[in-house]
Length: 470
Ligand code: SAM
Image (cartoon, rainbow, N blue to C red; front, side, top):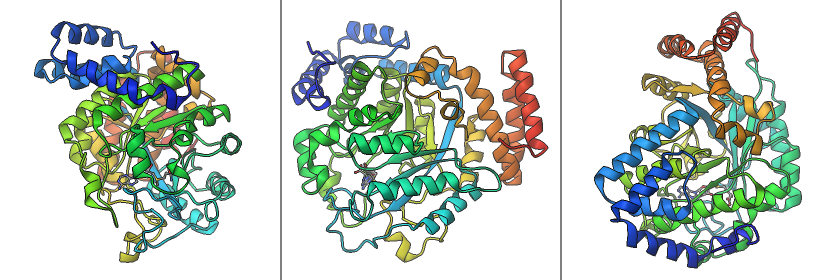
């Protein structure tokens, strides 16, 4: 059909193939035998093609949908256990030269207060985040070669890593900035970033061109090939995502999986993470932009099917989603969530005033503090994890995928998650959260099958209680 390897990303993720996929899915959505065969393949837990997964997404048979949900839960448990990694976004600058019609950063928006953090601001912001207990950040910036050139981004990363907090440094900085050159990706790699994240927004080229009418982001091919350039530049871990609600979700879902297939075929490693943001109402945005919004049930089905189709890829849910929606999708495959987030530039150090709110990108739905999020996760028997051990041990990219594919990740991630949770409980947690957490650690320690690993973990946890830090 297609020679995945020789085609560029935007050639492979073609409108023609997506339309054929959707027609194929429509034709087969009630075909019980085919749906059962696809589910049988999915039970091998090695993933599905975009066509197979699209048939499942189109299928509306309630009993089959329950099978999909059960399988997604099982895969999540096998590959990721009950750990949920926590992070926070850090907005560096909302200066932007693009004209994205759904984003309040668009260059024509005159209501938004334009802000850019100085290095001193960054020290204050990051210290505030560290005072909450965060160890992992995702930096975000608009695209503006004058106000936010790559040198500024690199300087910010350098500042973040060099901040010496009493409870240790930020251990991983993921980066969500506009598509850039191979040379700049190499600079980001050399600065020690974790994952490079870039949302495709939409794989529907015609809509993409309309939704991004002006600015460098208008170039669909350049944007769609960004992950290839990032990998060429030496970045191991890339994070995909579409902004659900801009176009028809089945189209986006097929495109997203094709993008993952392209990366795996060309670079030998698929995306490290997939984010599933849904469009939110925001300042100076035409309400018509939100016509393709998806229901919470459809959203949950998409999450479950991403988990089934790409079992080795982490899945990220931000505070765009409410507590209730997060509760619904966490068991279906989510591995990372943000907590205590602010989407305004400088929102962590300064309490939100009316002026700060106008610099926010969009309203967050989950406004709880990190302590409340940690408490909530543990009450549902999840282990909130602040772990970045893989990254520090060089287990990224294909090495991480090999570990994940062999399910070995459970053997090292579980103890690491418990140790970082213990640090959090000692250094930051409220008394109630601490109590719940200590009981959880006891229970989870007992679940470590290997006696030697269990003993070493217990010893480290004891040392953390005595004040030792990583
Ligand atoms: N400037 C970078 C770029 O061009 O990709 C990314 C930074 S932007 C702060 C991060 C993401 O926010 C965008 O990729 C977009 O998907 C998302 N976003 C923009 N407007 C949004 C809205 N109204 N609701 C939800 N998410 C939105």
